[in-house]
Structure formats: C-alpha cells, structure tokens
Image 1 (spheres, rainbow, N blue to C red):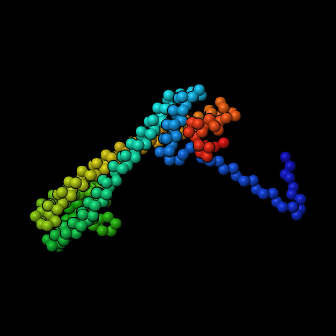
Image 2: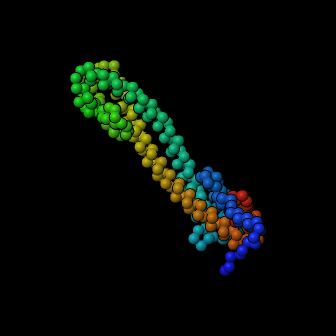
Image 3: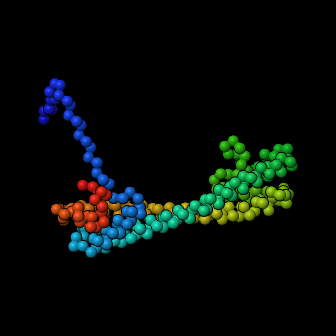
Length: 233
C-alpha cells in the first residue's frame, strides 16, 4: 500500500489521539465486592442464562466468598497494628536497659566485650547490641537473664526485675505477631485468588450482556450495577 504524500506547504495531519477507555471494574476490593454482590443478585433474578463455564449460583458464591475473605484480611491487618506498636515500645525499653548491663560488665571485667556473647549481645551495624531480628532477640533475652544471675548482676536496678517482665511480654508478642502474620498471609492469598476469579467473571458477564442485548446492553449493564463510566466499550 502506498504512503500518502503531504503536498508541499500543507500542514502535517494531526496525530491520531489514543482512545482512552474507562476502567471496566473498580480498582479497590470494597467497591469491587459491592459490585460483584449486586451483579450476582441481578443475574440470578434475570432471564440472562448461565455462562458455559460459570453458573449464576456459582458466581453468587464466588462474590460472597470474596467479600468475606476481604473483610477477614482487613481484620487480620488491623490486629497486627497494636502488636507492632507495643513491640516497638518494648524495643525502646530494651535499648534503654542495655547500656546499664554493659556498664556492669565494664565495672567488673577489663575485657568486658569478651562476655557480651554470654549476655546475648552481638555486633550489628558496627555496634554491640541485641539482635535486630525479633525471634533471635527473644533467645538473646533469655541468655541475658541467665547471664545476669550467673554473674550476680540479677539484684541490680537493671537486673532480672527489669528484664524478666520485658522478656516475657516480648516473647508472647513475637509469637502472636508471627501467628497473626501467617494467618493474615493466608487470608490475603485467599482474597487475591477470589479477586482474580471475580474480575474474570465480571468481565465475562459484561461481554455476555453485550452479546445477548446488542441494542440495549448499556441500560442492561447499568441495571445490573455497572455504572456507565466504569465499564469499557
């Protein structure tokens, strides 16, 4: 095919504008769940038949499962927030007490750093501190308490009376946090899988409506809950 030639002096044709389509479906989980629930109900009540690979009843169940998993994933995330906040506060209290333990060692021994390992203290980022990873920090706190008793620092102001309650709470919170993280991860996975299924189904339903109502598909889609600006052409 020959390329059209623009006559000399004539203005160049304007470049074709890219066609921008509105997003077919809501981006966020909550409005997507609301849309899926509404569409499922309207499809069940309509004369529009099942898809070959998806029945009306199955889609209604998918929509309900997706909404439930979304709520559970959000609730699990909310549960983590206070745990994370308290662990951060405990980290600060541990950081406050550690210099005093180091001072006890410096007072007692000339080679005080040689005893740091007994107390769960290691070198990270160029400084001697408790492990930053929380499961390892739990173990280090037990070592610290045992070493305080062994070296007779347990009765001092920053002895076991200071460290024992912090270590106990820290251990409990770390366990809860790990359990919650695992539980949330499972719920988020279930939510994500459900979201993919729901999106696939809703897109198929849009095409299903267009094929069955070639002249009135826009009104049919609006009646099912799709807003005109939220589905593509």
